[in-house]
Image (cartoon, rainbow, N blue to C red; front, side, top):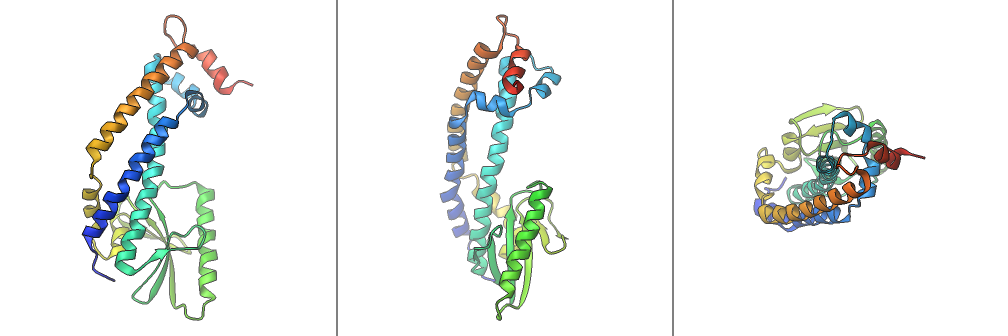
Amino acid sequence: MNALDMQKVSAFVNQNIGEFHKSRLEKIRSLKLDKVLRRKNPYLFRAKNIDSAAELITLILDATLSSSEESIFGQFLEEVAVYVNELACNGQKSSSPGIDLDFTNDSVRYLVAIKSGENWGNSSQKNRLKQDFANALRVVRQSRRVGELHAILGICYGKGRQIDRGNYQEIVGQKFWEFISGDPDLYLKIIDSLGYEAEQQNSLFEAQKLNVYQQFTEQFIQAFCHEDGQIDWDKLVRFNSGN
């Protein structure tokens, strides 16, 4: 395993974190009130005694954006992990479906699927991952040169540990970053690089977010509120769930 050049890692993060912020802005600019309302559960918000348009819009948009950001940032973290391993182990992006990384260390070959967090999928998706590992392992083992071979699910954040999942090992948090880099402190070092231009980028995002929240609140009041400003729940539920 090569000594990890943190200057290169930081440069990669700085160069690519802009795509995360760009995607956040594109997401919020692409939102449409009718589509957002149709995807959220009006019964839940009624049960929580939401009684103002501004409060409802804030809750709905916060939930929508939070889910989107988790997905966007997860993809970014996976790209960082692949780059780190390229530097440390000459690893490369795998061509096998469902597998993100293929590398060899100490004469052991690893096929790695990377997820950002532990709550990454439902039971069907996890079963699909098992099948993807089985298919990838079968293909690699057809080579006469293959030696020891392991399938790994790497999870970028979560309490550092390693778990046997049958036909693959799950490696989480600090242990995962050390596994792909050889550096037990990498999980801490990466966090410093993520702050690059964060204040400037977040200020731009918050300004755009405020505009969208105000526009959606005005549109919602016009379409789904009584004259006194109270939410017309019957009208909202008909829009969301009516035939």
